[in-house]
Length: 576
Image (cartoon, rainbow, N blue to C red; front, side, top):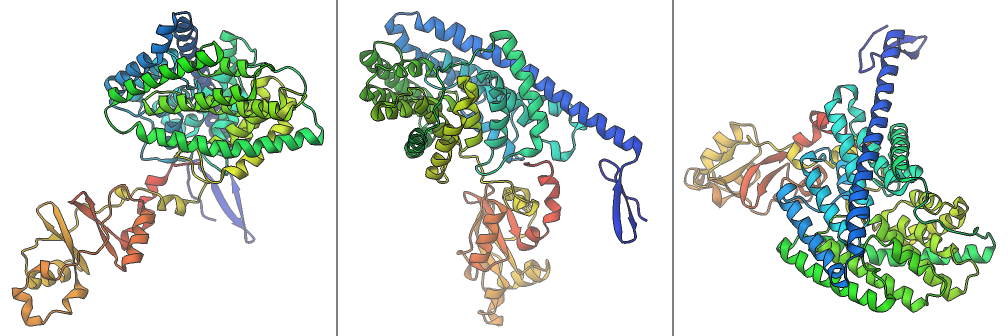
């Protein structure tokens, strides 16, 4: 019998060929206390997130946006421009030039242990979100809410990291994200499912289930105590379950899948544009375009439906007297306005824009088909468009039940969501999603190459002779190849294989540059380990130079890659 220690002080003993694993009473009690502490901290994360989201929503919607909608039309038209300029200033001066991502930052932090949430950027990003949303830009409140909750969880976990094992390094990050969604939508189950589902396209972060549940419930109760429990958009009537309407739900799902792919392509192009040019110029151009959309919306509907997250636009569209062409025009205008806001540097969520588009597609389908149930197709469209855009079919269907207050819409919504998912392919509105959870080896292959670069690798100057190369840099260091570097500038790779092509008597008079290879692939620090392996296999080499532009940084060798156990610490506490 051999005893060994682990985090929980497990003891194993072998009896008649069978290994029995047990915990003694003291260690079991300690493990139970630690688990209760983690759940208590998850609940604390939920309460703090609920308070923070309540304050964020009150300031953005109840103070600033309500004030803007009471102003003259000229002031309303200029509101988004002012908001984008303030957001640009906040990101530059308070968030140290950070990007506009919010929900994307949660997904990135979940998957990339080398890029955790930078809590120094949180105040600036949230202030930018308040300016963007409070002054009328057409984005959602949920993105900043997810970001705020994930930041709260990260802060608590960093302060009390001794209470968590390496495998639990993201537990409060996920719990906080769930709490943010639960609070802003008054939908605790949606918050739970979305936070677990959105990091992956075809999987769930199931190990975070219980802490995320506690945080989501605590956040919902906290927010509901402040703002009430009424659904954001109550829907009247009961959904039918005849085959005709269920077939129509599948057709709506197909249409939403196609249009969601187009929407995702537009938004991802807008995200790329938001990284180009001067931020102030982009903000002014976007603000001018949003003013034009505001004027067009007033001309079409007589209301300020181009402003805000879109709840009023949805209520307007659901009225049975609205024509199909008007619904299509409103939806097109909202898509364009959302894309312009993203390109202009606005900070906000894309969850609600997806919801609005799904409802408008469903409303247009209802008008075309003459459905007797005016609420069925819009609700089905919400589930399909949201589920396809974020690749979260379960969260979308649960959202329909909680958002509308009518859980009976789940069955047709589920049918539409499945059809939309099949239509969507591999596209997603977030570039940081991965297909599913992977094992330790696969996860390590995705590590950035920077974790394994040998920055102390020997190099040879270009004026050295082949004689010096062979005896001092190859034989002397037991290497088959070495980088040729002039100062800090990389020139090529000198290998022992090439020396055989040169007569021995020419070695003392031939310089290294005459025999070096310049066709060896050059890696960059942002390559993954997998990229390096593929490059080595393609070039039939066992060593790659790593450079930034032409500046030599180091090398990566096949031996380093094979010795994956040396980078185990880098992967500990990584993704679920």
